[in-house]
Length: 351
Figure 1 (cartoon, rainbow, N blue to C red):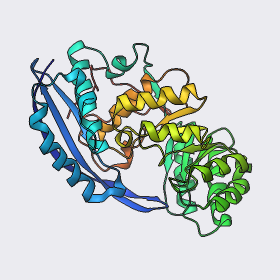
Figure 2 (figure 1 turned 120 degrees about the vertical axis):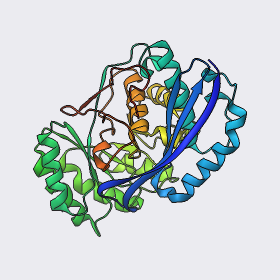
Figure 3 (figure 1 turned 45 degrees about the horizontal axis):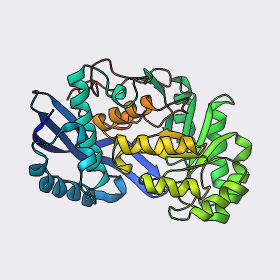
Figure 4 (figure 1 turned 135 degrees about the horizontal axis):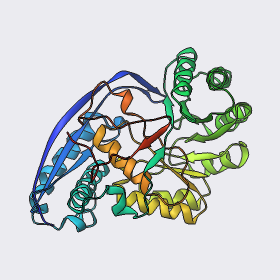
């Protein structure tokens, strides 16, 4: 199957409400929608939505790189396309090209994309709700709604309170709304120093935490390892997992019990599968999440999660409801804290 054409369109999707993290608020998601045409007359879809922290620069960088790459990709074999990309391509663009090629191949074969990655792929994936309201009361209301909707796992954004007591009040309010039988994760997005992280996590341990995600800033693997050793709660690495080599360093440093894999960040589905295999060999678990992507990127992450081997924790894929609109015709379903794969071949989504 040869690539005969590439086209792309920029998009901008507002969020229903501001999404708050310790780094500030996100009000929209921007990216590029990629269509890869083949000599079989099949078009594969991909999405390049650079991390929101990159701002408009990330979109511009991806579009410039795609304009430069596109002529050289014509005539390429779709199966080998991603493996043949030159170094230095923005990871979100690499993800879009990888996804589009795999989508086209899976559509041609009449199978879900997940089956190309693992012929024993599961048909659905457990997912968590994400709470990012600015106030404790609003976060508790979101938690109650998530429980009512059937979610068995919730991730709460933290690192925004001025002191440990503020974090304690926020976490207590959410745990109270969830009750004792829903898993609770915290995500600090690197907001704390090592000392703050140890002290704060210890004070929150009584609320029954599944893990705390990225408690200290990325790049401080020794600090993360110390938090993991001293805080008494499992630790997940997110912002430190930016590629295969970065994931290996996290594991070698003993810095995390869980790796959070974002296809947009690590450069595509096949790189993500390599990271997941590495984590499995090291005895670490893996959680797949989006970067609040549009529907094509979220579908890609869903197929990735479905293709992972063994038992997987709830994944951060139920983010479509954060957007006020989407680029796919039919939203991906979330049913009682589970996301089933679309029934159609490939990604299973249409624009």
